[in-house]
Figure 1 (cartoon, rainbow, N blue to C red):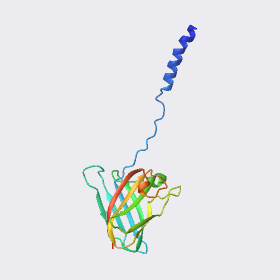
Figure 2 (cartoon, rainbow, N blue to C red):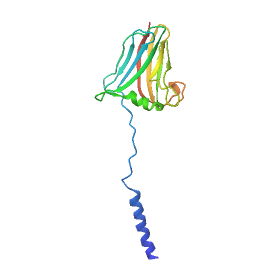
Figure 3 (spheres, rainbow, N blue to C red):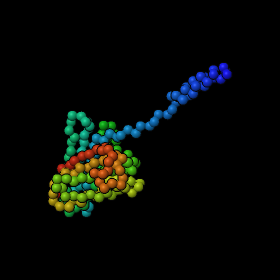
Figure 4 (cartoon, rainbow, N blue to C red):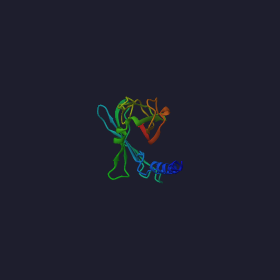
Length: 183
């Protein structure tokens, strides 16, 4: 009986030391990407002048305001092929985050929201592996002369499928609002 009582504490100590090993592999952390720059390139079908929308915020939440530019006006009645590129320019050379968005297409979606009377509409030209919209490539129709804003938003882990940004959920990776004129 005495032997059994002595063996029990030794067994308990052995279990504690083997169960608390520091050799367990760490759980991988998937850090969110840093995005400083968004470039939206709009190429008119049938020829014409390409319009570039650019947003750059190199200091993130720092004191400097983002630099936002639009290279020109859209032409009414024209459909544009759109491509979105997102980058991290805090690294040299700049890191093309669009590649990661494409690799993780099921976890991302771009949204295009016109406001303030801007008469444009968009349709997705690409999809993730499940057939849901992605938005790295899209078509923009400049329907009629107008002006307002176009907000381009990249959401991480949105609900898919969705009916738009209002029910997509997820977290915003980057959002930029551009002043756009259709003439």
